[in-house]
Image (tube, rainbow, N blue to C red; front, top):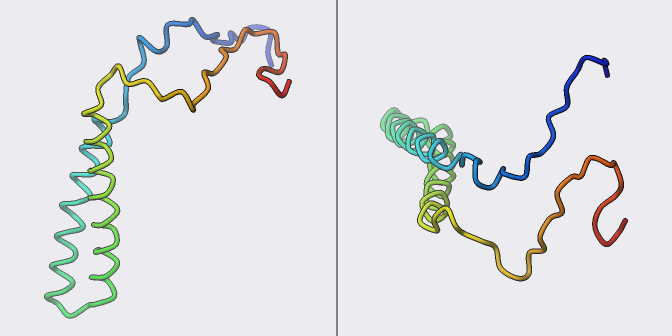
Length: 102
């Protein structure tokens, strides 16, 4: 590492300033659903069952992702995991191992 490089440290405000990729995933899922549906119909009409099956698999994955994304978006921005998920300890910059195993 060069002496002039600056390492960005955590500020502690990441949970309040973080941006969720869910909206982007929503649009990509919609885009993939549309193209996979188009490909499925086009290949089925033209007698290409292998390619139609491949588009069907992509369609299934895109629709599943669309359902997961809408479910998570409906949870809201204040969703917190349950008690079974332990809190993570932020990096303090001292390069010491964290957690119960350290």
